[in-house]
Length: 281
Image (cartoon, rainbow, N blue to C red):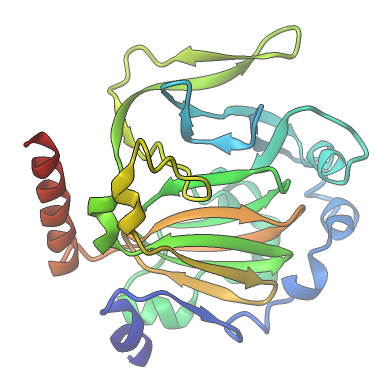
């Protein structure tokens, strides 16, 4: 298949402008539709990530800190996004274990359970289909995934900063104690260590404001930046580093297809090992 040959095999990202133009969601999925017309969705209790600063799954105060996971009626979450209710915290529907099919199955008919041409090219169905909706303050820190990712924006915009896997020598990793945000009775956040969990390797650098005194190698990296608009799909290849921001109330759906652990993966593993070895010298 052409897409596999031209993009998946060489591990190159691209934006596809017509891939989801037939989705009913592009016309239907307003916040009012999700609240009222899809009446069964509004009162549903769903998983919402809550943080004090918008950074879930990110390095903070020398910890790898995960969000508090609130269970709340979806309509109450929409009240926060629409600013009908004010909160000092940042809320984001971003649970990444196929939450579209698990928590919002009523919405699947407005999109697709998979992307047929990608499923055909890869010879498999997606491992997960995720639904994303949140505030503009919600940021995804720089990281990589072992998935071929088709990221579809239904409304609003997503802002991606990308690094190819070959930039690995310039991107710092450190080991961090995992922890979770917990809201105290007075509404303030505390960071609670996951004491029995192993340390997590994560990237401490903010690519939008890199500390080049601390991480001088990053000056040699070559980031790409792109905006994915409503109706567009980003093909984000496996092992590409990405940092993500969004417009307020942006709605998106992404499809994670497990990567092939082929020569590209072996190359990355070699590069990763060489990078770690050089730092030990």
